[in-house]
Image (cartoon, rainbow, N blue to C red):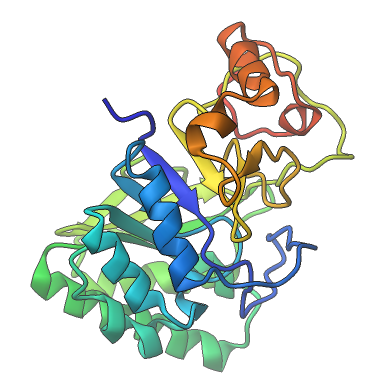
Length: 285
């Protein structure tokens, strides 16, 4: 039995954009080395078959992204990548044929603040990449517009949807609105997800929950690029560090008093950590 459905492995916390919706990070800028990444995979292999190359940062910016995927293949671990898509033209060819690559999530809303001329080329680069992926029929592409809100969406959403309708020969217009987990199917293994804009939790924010449950430490954990292990993918600053995988085994880290306290709290629908009490990305009782 595998303990986690997935483990988030932050291969870099450095990004090439400055998106308004992103909480940024005050941690030291760094890129996980190939050697350390291989070590991380060895330590998490007994716990999962899937990693997500993301917490903070832009994974396609990693200088050895293709070699990281080769490491995954060697360990028989499948990789999902979440990217802003701006580097897809330069990096796409290096990764699209890698056997370990299972899914690419592209955050189309990352470009909502950019100039029109760059935006148009950005969309075309992504479409060019998806055409190549379509021919393979193996890798899943999830296009994301996670910027819905009460005041209305960015004007570029309409442009993107019109381009999607034309690109994939859709018979009906794509409507605004939150989609289910699978999103709208555009073509074989290509989907569009629409979600409300997410407000990131952080220590110091007002507590909004004291009761509830979460999938953190149940279906997934996160490993930051310095090796710090955190309960979930939303702990972008390492507010709830449980230990460091450089120094201890994952079994030891998951058995710490803090980790056990968080898990037991959620089993009783109690939110133990202040950070968790500021997070709306949970399943409330």
